[in-house]
Amino acid sequence: MSGYELHQKLRTKVVRLTKKKAYPEAITALHTGALELLSQGEQGSGCDLGIYMLDVYNLADTPVTAETRSRVTDIVAAAKADFWRKKLVDAAVKWSSKSGGADAELRLFAAKLYAKDGEYELAEPHFLAASSSDPEAAKEFAGAMAAWLSAVAKRATEEKGEERTQDAIERIEAGRFALRATLPLLASRNVPAAVAFIQTYLETLTARLRSLLLPISPNPRAFTAPNGTQTDFKLSITANSELNFAQMATALSLAAQSGVNDALRTAWANLVRQFERESQPDPNATGAIAQIGTAVFGIAQRRQGGNMLSDMMASLFNAPPQQQRVAAPPTQSNQPPPSATSAATEAKADDLVDDEMD
Image (cartoon, rainbow, N blue to C red; front, side, top):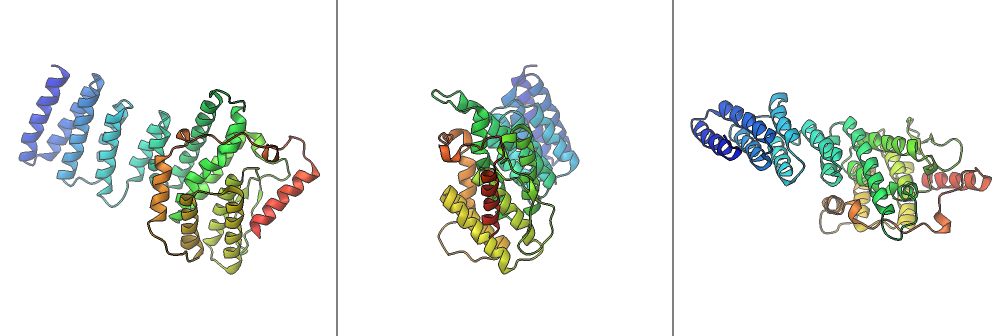
């Protein structure tokens, strides 16, 4: 029997079964048929039956369980990386959301699948959703963002006229990738996930880019919270203002979980002013930062039209790094520091930490 014939036969059979409300039999037929068609290379027909199975899930008010999820992931894993697979994943997410929010396991499965195939733009929102309830997912997110950074930097070195090395480009762009995760996580008050992300991200990057860290000792160094809260958070001091801000924003937000006082609010305000002066963030990032100020530190923000967080998220997802121009080569003033430690360099790094803590 050809793939087309099997596809049509199964759809006809399922119509009869659903009319009789024989949903379990219909689901089994669609699950088995989808896998069979995908094994034959019938991508469109196989994914179509998978989507049909999700329609029957919805019709039968089927909840998310290990069994119902595994049927979905079986089919998704068997599908090739194309628009049909994306349609199937989107339908699965829509079904799982009806059970009271995104299913973290399903979202993480989709995120890891996309990331494995280098489809980081598609993976990103799934990683964010999975991280909302599982800090371990944020660690996976960090690994994927580090890989995305590396892929973007590698492509940039292949552009005509580009003379910088991949390592140099990664050092320059590392902060922007960190902010893509930490800003939305902190704005949604998901501090544990932000901590897990930034720590894993830094560990991953510094393992291969030792020059990312300024040549001072100790580095990383312990973070001292302005409100006296004791944490085990460590700051990796770099020459990248965006990366430093992502760390400090996360560290201050972590301290705020034990209570917010005027010293902590002042530290946050000073950090934001310094970041805006050094990095000139776009309006969407500025909106997310204001949201963090309100949600985490209790700082009222000025009224303005629109939903800043939604706009920021839309901007992040619709403008992936590989579609943006890589930053221009660094000037002499912001070149990565020499490997030899000097008193002047260490003093500058100490001033950086002091400024962020003021």
